[in-house]
Figure (spheres, rainbow, N blue to C red):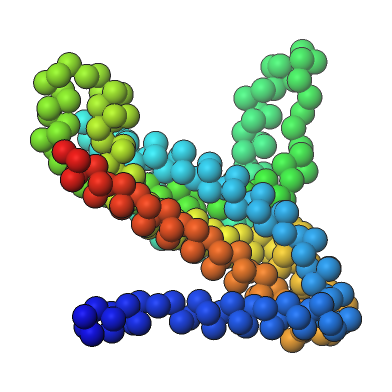
Length: 275
């Protein structure tokens, strides 16, 4: 009994209590101090851009990553080698460098190629000539984060799919299930429980890495803080508020995703016991 109580005391989230106390204290300072309140009102204007970049880029990276993972598990050696080439090359490039390359080299090259391919249609007057400025810096940043994270997510999906017992897949095949139905009803439900912890960690990391879009002048939380600090020279106050907002987002997400993991784990245990 004493040992059990000791374990319970060790498992109690004292760190969370301390974090909440600090968060409430900072909130009180923001509410009561005009300077901090002004900084907060300015910086918070970029939160919707941060959320947009995070959600859209992560959704696109997940779709692309799943496709790359399935290529890596296919029966074709060429598809497997192509998937491995993509993963290793993209993972080997720092995200900031990839962001600059996509924004200032990749997109202009794409526009040039598009105009070359569409030249007959443009000459006929069916479509207009595409300009580099037609692709906003916001979307260039989203594309760069999508490509960068898709390589990491592909490896997460691949590992989760390969963790599923091959015997269950063979059983589904013996029952006459198509490849799609085997994946949907047998592989994916089991793989998802394995995938969720690292997958959710990548989502939280995407929230933080979305701050990199500020180097392109995209008006996210970090960029709004940079502009305010450069004009007011209130660097300590500004970046303290920026860090505070990111911590609220990331810690809140981490707690919500951890709760989801525990719920799925309980449901899995209950299902096994019911069998």
